[in-house]
Length: 364
Image (cartoon, rainbow, N blue to C red; front, side):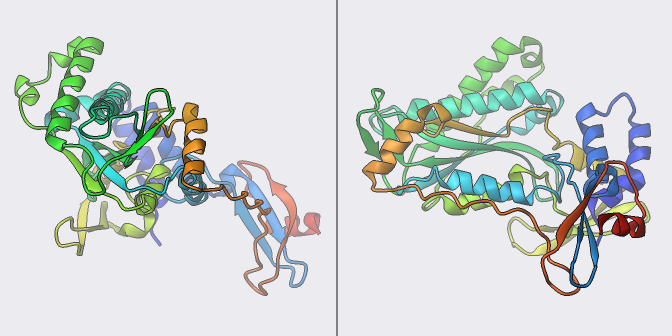
């Protein structure tokens, strides 16, 4: 099966050579990490079946959050952790999207623009939520940054999963909102736009001067819709927290320096195919690689870490008791031949390409 690593392995050096001096260090690092992921280059472990003497190698993952194949376990762990934050109340999914005029600036100044996007969108929700007409208290939210569409084009936006509940400033009382209505999106859009404008003007006046003035007078897209108990949205978030843009299973073929991949049409929901030059495919993929250390998931208000006692108190009010975490079992692969558990016999050093027969003898 075709993988992103195959494309990078074959065309990565030529791509880096062509765009030398332009490609970001984080992009170059992502290319190399994805190429090495789960290969002898990173080392690993060797397991032996005591019954049939079959040897299996398990190589280390690159742990790069942009790798399409090595973060499934982390996604599951993240999902389990976020589920512990859920309250038995209705939830809403609120989405803030940057206008297209700001996207070139965002692509070239990711840390700054993404940070402002998070800060101002969360602050806009908090400001409206404090209004007694809507919630009248301090709200909470889990925010996740997305930057891609189904065809890998650049489309930065932030999704928030928000419980329909607020807490007073002294943390003594709580209040719920309506089940089918959370905050008015038109008012939210105006507040978000104004806050973003002031923040950009203050922090980067030279960038602010490059923005067409018309963008500050048009409507900014904000969506808000009910999200049930919140669990389905968390499931939607989880696969994208530790991966970028496209999974290996959506790749169809690499042929004549062109990549064909599948995507689901946003309107018909039918699967379609798109073919683009391999360098264009790589460019589309890499533009979603985030700056080193940037947090693409953020918790606000009563869901932030500093409000853990408040969340625990709310859970008690609703009669919820946290279950004891299940102990994590050590990894022991099953033999692909006889199906019995295998035992660890040796560790493979990084950058090694050992002879399997020699290792079997050493491990036995």
